Each structure stands twice: as structure tokens, then as C-alpha cells.
Image (cartoon, rainbow, N blue to C red):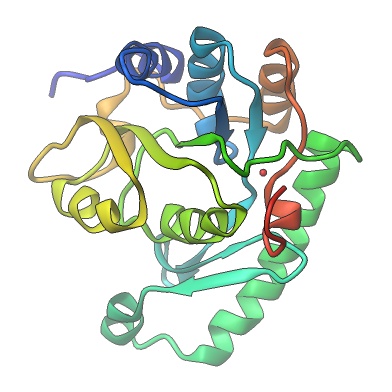
Length: 230
């Protein structure tokens, strides 16, 4: 199988070329850590836009952790989105989801401290918010992030991803004003199959990428429950 991208940085540069053609009002780039950060850093550099994070964690099916049954977004009032189709098909009960949500909120708190310290988040109201990940499978995680970000009243909400299933992209169009997706393969098996290098991104790589982009601020997710304010 021919790889679509050599690595996340190449994917980010390819996305940046497409985004640069658009009329984007005061863009701010928000990455879903960890895999989305190297992609988003390239976009932020090309657009000369600030880079920030939206902290969201997937809740996987017990026997298939990579399959998301729900996702939770950090915030004063954390927001959870449940994929009811997956929940029914997998027979996952609400008690499991609630217990896992508590675990994932602890991990979000750890990541916020590790990546962002105590700096203030970038205000989003009236700006073009570009949400970036390294790829999408079911869309549950990014959908949770997008729904939380709408509360910040951006001028426009844009989703930018290198690769995702065509069906998932179609479902996500109702959540955003625009989607930029470079590859929509059918059948779709796994995000990593479309990269030459799809190593696990470590915390150190996230902090280095954030530091490398001027204007980097703080997690929007930590105040996702407030109208605005990864």
C-alpha cells in the first residue's frame, strides 16, 4: 500500500498549503494532542497563527480500546459525547463510561500541567478556529472537541485532517463551517497505514512543538465550558 504521507510534519505542510488558499479571519490553530500537535505546528507556522491545544480524551470499548465509545473534553464543566451506535453494538453500559471518564479527566489534568503550565488560553471569539488531528477514524473524539469549541463563538470552525473515512467526514460536516481533508480512502482500515512514520508522539515532542511556534498559549479545553476563551 502506498503511503499518503512520510510523517506527520509532511501531512501538516500539505494541509497548510490548502488552508493558505482560504480567507481565514484571525486564524488560531488548535491541536488534539498528542498526534495532532506535529501536524498543527506546521500549519501554524505557515499561517503565522498561534498554536494551542484542545484537551480531549477518548473512552474506548473495554476489549477494543482503539474503538471510541465516548470522548470527554476538558473544561470547567467537562463535556462528554457518547457514540450511541457503538455503545449499543458493543453492549457498553453507562457505568463503565462514567468510570472511564473520571480516569480520562485525570489524564487531561496531567497533560494540561505537563504541556501548558499555568498560562492563559487564547481567546477564540470572533476568530477562525482550525482544529487539527493526525487523522480520524470514528470521529467521536473530534466531534466532542468541536461541540465544546462552538461555545466559544468563533467566527468560523474549520476541521483540518490529513486522512479520514469518507463516511466520517460526511457526518462531521454538520459540526463545522469547513473541512479540509487530504485523503478519504475507501475502505478505511487504520490511520497509521497512511503514514510512513507513525510513531507514538511523546510528551516531550508535544512541548517542543508548542515552543517552536511563536505565539503559543494555553489549553482552550481547560475553560471549554465558558463562552469565550486546548
